[in-house]
Image (cartoon, rainbow over all chains, first blue to last red; front, top):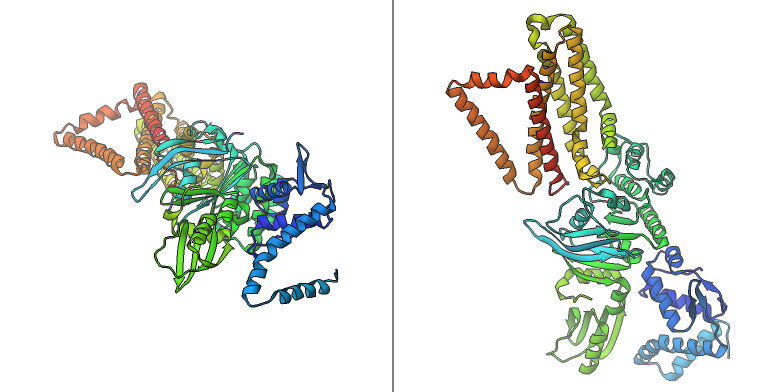
Length: 128
Length: 294
Length: 217
């Protein structure tokens, strides 16, 4: 599995791993029942400590994104589309809440904020 | 599973300070980073374990076997890179390694060649002609060549250029892959262990002040900025506190407690930032007295 | 243990071979030129003493290396029992001394003065030499205990010994004392006692080494 982990970000490695694997699962890049590398394999590949990967996998297990089979390792869980959408919405809300609050503190109105979101989506070729 | 090593009430007294009593152990499959200021006793800890120094009290075990100088089988499981690198100076690296290979049944010459290549170490040069960095590399190759289950590393990347340092860390990550080996890594260079270590132990003045899982530290510590104009308040769980007027900046080692308290006080514009393990380690070393044991 | 001896011999190969070579030539020359026939009973001793100077030179050369290169530190980490290490450290010196004794013995045979007395003389002088080396070794070892008190005690004992000797000199008893030491030199009883004493001191040396508090030189 190809991940892009960096020491330069203020985001800890554990979060980066969780976020990137989650993104791959929710986007469908890792379909259900794909087997994930073992904790030790991933630790060695990404040059991170075992405990970091372990915690990341534990978090993904708790979110229901992956499951483990005794003796066989970790696998991507089957998620219905609406489950995926709910999770993605959760994540979005968590991530942008502080950004929206500081934007609003800086004087932007709700209209400004929504307009900016519109622009971003247009630029990335998505419209709804 | 048997612990890779155990220290039970180990103490060693010197005129300036006393090391210990140390009571800690290491599980196989884990990396324990050992951090502390110069003179805190890090090297001495390893000297005691490996038999270079006799502790005044206590006992140690390596994979369950007591560290008895008369029954040295326990040493076969150890690969040690110390603070001083000793060789037959008049012999080449290769000859030195051949001498050492006689003592370890699991020695692999192939591994020696492979590692020497990866570390860019010339094996045909006499030991006395090797630069400081190359001497470290020779010690590393000697320690790794017999695939020991426990690696005791005291500043193993000192004097190494960035490329070789990355190779050394790569090799260590590979070594860990089977989950049965353990690494006890003492260093000042925090970036070495910020990714490698599973747990960190902080040594100050001969005592282990704190031992915690690296991820726990990253989870608990935050830099917190907030606005508050009140005066008489004492924030709990903070390692440092800067103030300019009503602007405050604290370093907290239990951010949930601090944030809760700030909420009760009614502080404004509260923002919490995560800290890197390097920053956390510096804070711990600066004011080790403040920090509670986890 | 033997691995260390082997390594040490190979490492000091040139110095050892050189000394043996020079020693052998010297001894053969002396044996053949009948210089030692002035007093037959001291043939062994005079041959032994010529190689002794070379021995002392080699000793200094080797132990200089040892200290300089801190090899105790290297050896202490190896998976060998501390008792074996204690013996192995001196194995080289014993080997060299045995070599020189053999050269002296060969010289005695070449000079045709071989008899039991010279054999015992050889044994006794080697034993004495070894005792001196052990005493020096013990003094050095006692310095590794984190305190100087053991060394001072030991030096105190030696000083006491010297005081005794000087008392003997003053009281005129020194000749009888020396005779009692050197007469048995050439007897089997003497040779045995001195050899046992030498072995005893050597064992003491090894035991003190194994009880060191630190091998960090």
